[in-house]
Image (cartoon, rainbow, N blue to C red):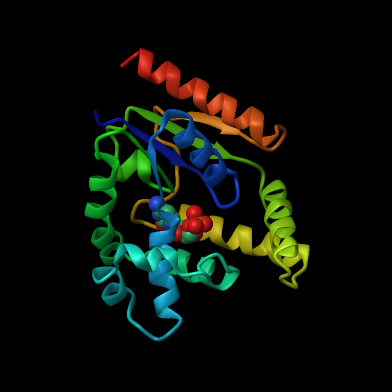
Length: 204
Ligand code: DC
C-alpha cells in the first residue's frame, strides 16, 4: 500500500524531528528532501555547476557528513531557486513517495508540487526568533562558534529566498494541517502531527 505524508515548513521549525517520529510511529520510510538540495549545494562550493551535480546525484551523496553546516544550508537554498535543479530531483522524490509501505517526505514543496495527491499534508511552522534560537542551540552544542544575531539573519535570508522564488516557493498547501511549534514542545507537536495523519487516513 502507498500512503504519502507530506511535511513542509521553513528552516528549523521542527519538521525533521516531527517527520522522523511520525515515520517511526507508522512504520513508514522517511526522506529529508532538504538533503538533496544540500548535497547539490555542497558540490557547488567545490566549483561544480548545480545542474551537473543534480543530474548525477546518487543516494550515497546524502550521507556526506558536512551537509548540515550553515554554509551548505545557504548554498542549498541558492541552488533550490534554479528550476532545472528542481526538475532533476522530482522523479527521485515521487518514486520515494509512492513506494509501498508508506513514506514521509519533508521539505518545502512536497504538498504543493512533488505530491499534491499526498494522503496527509502537514505544514510545520514557528516564529523566526524561536527557530533561530533552536538552530543557535544546536550549533553551540555541535561546537560551532557563532552568535545569535548571525543565526537569526541567516534564518530571515533563507526564509525570504525559499518563499520568494518563482518556482515551487515555500507555502502551505490549501489542504495542509498547520502546526505552530513556537509555544509547544516536540512531544506535543508529534502528538498533533500523528493525530492529523490519523484523521486524514479515516477520511480517505
Ligand atoms: O530543509 P533544509 O534546511 O535542509 O533545506 C535546505 C534548503 O533546500 C532550503 O533552504 C530550501 C531547499 N529545499 C527546497 O527548496 N525544497 C525542498 N523540498 C527541500 C529543501
